[in-house]
Image (cartoon, rainbow over all chains, first blue to last red; front, side, top):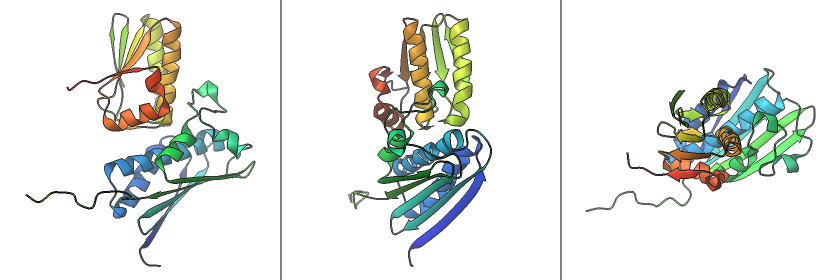
Length: 151
Length: 103
């Protein structure tokens, strides 16, 4: 298909890789010509999903995290996958302020942030098998067509 | 991380990015300073910060709880547009005053 592009990365579930993951996705999406705001939105969402995989999916053990990205037209499709312990109750996990680890001072806003900053969020998970977070964002929506006024 | 203690007030000069990776250090160091110096007021300085995820919100809420129990207050300064959006969305602006300054 024309006008599409794909990228995959696999990396260790170490917290030091959180910034690597955000920056990688951010640079992949530059071909869509996003605003600074749109890049920040995607970086935040990636950070949340990867942090979840590290803390909850793998519970701080070091295993692989898989990110795959695709652009089609002006839309970015993003998948963050782990093969960790999975989520028992996805609906509960996605409730704002819910956290299974209050002792770690998690705010319970990870999924809320992903939802707020992306256009679409879907979570698939199977206990004992792992979790996939799928997100979408269309770049340049509602942007004004002109950037400068002629004098 | 940089910190400044003036009497019972602690200013935390937040790093450029706040995520799960560095929030633990931030939490430990600031709690240590709060305890040692009988801190009642905590100022989060966002001057250098251009990225924060929900881990940072966790740090703010945690410090708020601690300081609130001691009868103190937390606030934020040098908050840019992006950080303002994150703080407002998370609802911490209900418990934390944001002071806007020009400098």
